[in-house]
Structures are given as structure tokens and as C-alpha cells.
Image 1 (cartoon, helix red, strand yellow):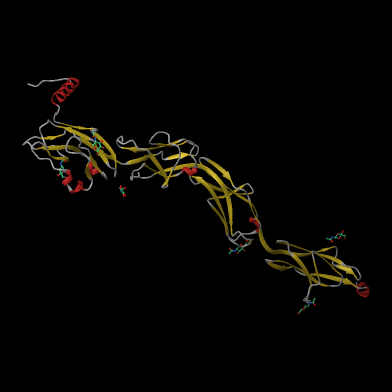
Image 2 (spheres, helix red, strand yellow):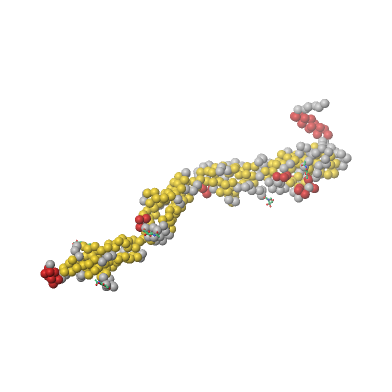
Length: 395
Ligand SMILES: *[C@@H]1O[C@H](CO)[C@@H](O)[C@H](O)[C@H]1NC(C)=O
Ligand SMILES: *[C@@H]1O[C@H](CO)[C@@H](O)[C@H](O)[C@H]1NC(C)=O
Ligand SMILES: *[C@@H]1O[C@H](CO)[C@@H](O)[C@H](O)[C@H]1NC(C)=O
Ligand SMILES: *[C@@H]1O[C@H](CO)[C@@H](O)[C@H](O)[C@H]1NC(C)=O
Ligand SMILES: *[C@@H]1O[C@H](CO)[C@@H](O)[C@H](O)[C@H]1NC(C)=O
Ligand SMILES: *[C@@H]1O[C@H](CO)[C@@H](O)[C@H](O)[C@H]1NC(C)=O
């Protein structure tokens, strides 16, 4: 027949016995559950009592309390011998320290003592259960610049030791203000806050795996780089590249004088011609915003072309008169003009216009640093007095 006693009454009853006989068989653990961080040292605080008249022969900690089986002494187990340190004594203190705890250490621990009297042994049930935890950073996967972001350093059980959490970004310790004990609050997140975050406990070696914080922001600092950066000459291959800082990466559009001409980070023009001269800009855009670059001007150099001579007035002059020849050409930069008379090696003049006083075939040559081109020749006829008379005589 069993007697049922309500728990509070049972406690009073036990206390009464304890007081009455000053020496009850007991083992008391300060914590019956311990949550410890991986690789840390755990102290299992413990006291024990036994009736007077007994002498303690052996004290040890064990992992099992199976009836009929003498429980093993953990300090004799190679897994524990190096890591287990008995801090207690042979009277009442049975505190133990277990260092460098691993997941494998997660089980029950019991204190056992053996007296000099046969069969007077005691095992302290229910023992201490040890849970070993690691740390995990909990962070939102992606945030937008300006958001308020909270990172949490999580353990699978509530750590028994009250310790200060420390935070790392890209392995560098952070000094930012903490919100609550295991949280890191980034009030208005900046893009510099992006990175790999891990957490740890002060004075502990274990560091959590890193969690990546991805901070999104609209394009900024959008600008065009022209390659080659030196003078561009017709026929060159030219690449305009648009640089833009944004997250996620921006989509790029190209404009020439306000007209859309292409997309993609690089706008390339092979065999460039003077038609490509103009003002270019790129626009970068992601879902958080857009930004235009400043304009860059492409000034394409080319040698003279379409060189021709025109005559101001008539190519037939009377002796003593002159006719003005005008040379026109298209080039960049503007060409220098030289005038030649056919079958004469040295120039007879320079500049845009030339006054011809004699009969002959004249042409101009335009040249700049990229090349030269000559015009077709024009013929100037001079009617001398005699000629003109003889002409009129024949005519
Ligand atoms: C206690 O540890 C020993 C040696 O590591 C092992 O063989 C035994 O199964 C353990 N007992 C319990 C109850 O976990
Ligand atoms: C037991 O011993 C440990 C280590 O010496 C000590 O820190 C602890 O205070 C002692 N406990 C009691 C109840 O005396
Ligand atoms: C465990 O802690 C020791 C020092 O207490 C340290 O040297 C070792 O690197 C740590 N191991 C791990 C895996 O953190
Ligand atoms: C480059 O363009 C010019 C006309 O603009 C053409 O005559 C020439 O053949 C082109 N060269 C190449 C290599 O395509
Ligand atoms: C062409 O001739 C007219 C008069 O005959 C003159 O006024 C004009 O300036 C000339 N043009 C040039 C470019 O010399
Ligand atoms: C220039 O020389 C060529 C031969 O060298 C000749 O055929 C031509 O008539 C000459 N032209 C003039 C304008 O003298």
C-alpha cells in the first residue's frame, strides 16, 4: 500500500527528517539543467550529506544510474579524464568542472559516494542534465538602406552562465550599441553595414558561424568611363562603360543626346565615325531607384575629307585682275590649307582663300594631324590684251 503525500508536505516531511537526524543521505545539485556553450567549461555545483558515523571512501561522478550495474567513474574514462576536475572534498562539497564541452557530453551526470560500511553507497538522483549549445546569428536575409535591423544571437537553450554577447562584422569586433542582451540593433542600416556577422560570448572561444547581411540600395555615383581615354580618331573602337554602385546591380541604359541608343554596362562602338560625335550618358536603375551619369562628350577626330575649291566669280580673268579661290574641307580638328600650282612643288599660298593672278591649274591641300587630302584642280584662264584681241579676231 502506497501513501501519497502532496509535494509541499513531502518537502516539509523531508526537512523534518533532515533536521532531526542531522545527516540524511542526500546529494543536492545547484542546477538540475545546465545549458553550456560549446567548448566552454561547465561547473556543476553540488553538495552532499550523509549520516554521522560513516567515513567516505570514494567520491566520483558518473553518467549512469542503472540498477544493479556499478556505475562507471567518468574520471577513468579517456573521454573525460583530461577534462574533468573534481573541485569538491570528501565531506560535503561535490562540485565538478568539465571543460571543453562538446555535443557528446550531452547526458545525465550523477554524483556517487561510497562509505566504509558495506552496501552504504549513494547516488544523487535525478542528477544534472547537460545541454551543449552553439550560437547562431539570426538576421533578415535582405534589408534596404535606412531600415531598422535587429540581429539576434541565438542559442538552442537558455545559457546558464550570464555572459555578455559580443558581435563581429567580417571578423572585426563591433562596438555598436546593443539593444537587448543577445541582440544587435542597427537603427538605420547603411550599406557599409553589409557583411558577415557572427557572435560570441565574452571570454569564450566559441564563435558562431557568420550570417550574411545584404543591404539593398538605389544606384549612386553613376559615371561613364571612355576607353581609350585619349583622343578618339575615326575608325577606332571605343567602349563606354557605365559604373554604378547599387544593390542589387542596376540595369544600364545609354542615351546619346537624350535618345536611347543601347543597354548593358558597356556600350561599344567599333569603327567609330564622326557621326558618333555627341553627348552620351548612362542611366542606372534598380528597384530602389535610378541615377543618371553626367554627360560625356565624344569628339571624334578625322582627317580632311570633301576638299574642294570654289571660285568666287569667274575663272576667266583679264590680265592685271585676280580671282579668289576658296578651299573648303571637312575635318576635325580644322585643317590647315596650302595652295599649289600644278607641276610646282612648293606651295604658292596658304589659308582658306587664295588670290590667283596668273593662269594655271590650282588646287588646295587640307591637312591636320590625322591626314591630308587635296582637292581637284581648277583652271584659271587669263585673257591677255593680245590674246583677247586675237581671240576676238578669230571669234
Ligand atoms: C556511460 O559511459 C560509458 C563509457 O563512455 C558508456 O559505455 C555507457 O554506455 C554510458 N552509460 C550511459 C547510461 O550513458
Ligand atoms: C565547493 O567548492 C567549490 C570549489 O572549491 C567552491 O567554489 C564552492 O563555493 C563550494 N561550495 C560550497 C557549497 O561550499
Ligand atoms: C576551445 O578552447 C580552447 C581554449 O580554451 C581554444 O584553444 C580552442 O581553439 C577552442 N576550440 C574551438 C574549436 O573553438
Ligand atoms: C569603317 O567604316 C568606314 C565607313 O564609315 C568603311 O569605309 C570602312 O570599311 C570601315 N572599316 C571597317 C574595318 O569596317
Ligand atoms: C566674293 O566676291 C565678292 C565680290 O565679288 C566679295 O564681296 C566676297 O567677299 C568674296 N568672297 C570671298 C570669300 O572672298
Ligand atoms: C604637268 O606635267 C605633266 C607631265 O609631267 C604634263 O603632262 C602636264 O601638261 C603639265 N601641266 C601643266 C599645267 O603644265
